[in-house]
Amino acid sequence: MNKLTLLAVLACTFSIASAKAPTHFSLRAESMGGAHVAVVDDKEAIHYNYAGLSQINRLGNYEKRPEQGYYPRNWIGDMRLTFGGAGDIFKFLSTYSDVKDVQDLFRDAQKDAGSQSSQTSAILDSLVKNPKYIKTLNSYDHKTMEARVKFDAEMAFHNFGAAFWINGGVAPYIDAGLILPYVVVDTFVIDAVAQIGGAYEIIPNQLSVGLGGKIAKRHKTNMVTIGLANYSTIVDTLKDQASDATDNFFDSKTFSFGLDLGVLYQFNREIRFGASLRDIYFKSLAGETLTPNFTIGANYSPKFMNSNTGFGRKFNVAVDFADMFNADRNYKFFSHLNFGFEIEQTLAAIPGLNNEIRFIALRLAGGFRGGYPSAGIGLEVLRFFSIEAATWGEERGYYTGQDENRIYMVQASIGF
Image 1: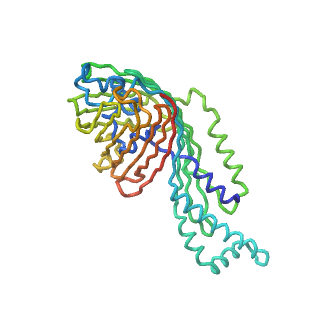
Image 2: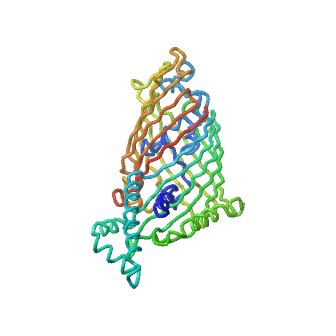
Image 3: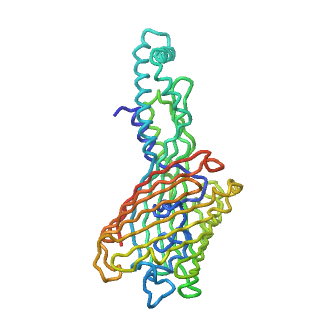
């Protein structure tokens, strides 16, 4: 692989930064369109609604808790280590092909430059001889190449949860220059968050509240522009960016502290309502003032679609009105509306043990996140190993449909 092609590959191995608060990417929730504030029956309660921690090890026992008896039991708790990464693989493949074409153009120009007054003239002559390259160059019109990487360490039990997670990445894009394209590293960011919290049942098995605290650190670098013709500087530039991202990472003055609040109400055996106010930070993070995320939602889990046997089945339909304080898109109602469903089926288990011992479980999900479709699949083996994949769209503009950023993420986790 040549150096110019290497740039495109490396530029796609990081994640896009966001002006929002540090965001944990749950593939279960994202595959449901992000509608999760009233679902929260596992470790994801740490990130979406702490009040949901009250459900862990309480679902699926009809005799003791008839208000929640139709839901499959969710074991004792969750302790997981997760690694994942994401990117638009289709855009990456097209960019990889385009970069090779551009490099062919550049090499041809280098060969011809020996008999000409300037390399620029040679490049222009090459474009005249090879019109296909003009179309390739035109494709570099603020062409983004985003991806994401993540690490999560989470544990959740009845009424208690804690997590440490990291998201890191860069948001490069390619623009068509006057003659040759150039890469702009728009944002390089690393977010690290440690959080802990719990839930309290005001009305047992019916009304719970949650509270959590967090410490967050964000590191960002300045914009960097790299001309594709000068690829001899690529390696040094990437090393400099990595060094900048780690400098003073543990400086306590750059940390911010925040709170998360939540409430969950079990209306009946099939319907739950939830609300959360998250990311209430008390100081700016990397020089940015963060807006809290206020979300309300509902979850419907019909009795006839659920099973508490050894071959347990769980079905959820959820809707959220999310990020209500985000004034940038408040005038577009559907930009805040998330909707999704999931079905989880145990495929191999020891019957008669109320889903206590299951060997293989499959989860399928789909929905719409701010108007963009989402979907996901997850496979759990022996409750210890799981692998998940999901795709969803994020809006970079001010209204749904203006500027979609399509995310494809895969992650693997181990734990109980």
